[in-house]
Length: 154
Image 1 (tube, rainbow, N blue to C red):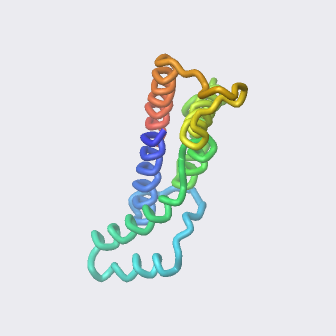
Image 2: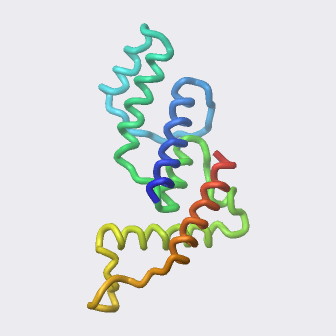
Image 3: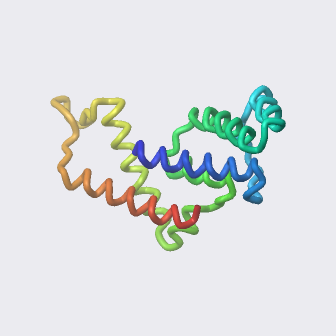
């Protein structure tokens, strides 16, 4: 899940910088939520050249995006829409977007139970929820398939 989150952060950051630098024109009108101080620092980097502006923009946008997690399907869709990739799930998976989103949601929920609740089985007071190697391998294959297909639309 960390790799998926990192991947989405990277795509959003790169596209956001391309938008800010004028290399990518999109119809997106979402807000990223930079402070006036950050915008001022980005603008004041102008006299030092475009590389300085881009580095300043990358620094402040990355800092802002660091407050978000992009693991749940709707969060991923919102993040990509923010940088000009609307309706990515229905475009990437035209016949089974719901099932792909559901599969990812199940993986995220299980990951969160493992991390935040010691993977305790809510139906048994004696231990963790059972898991077998095939469960992990299936989760990896699902995430890999989702990222591969989404990447073709970013």
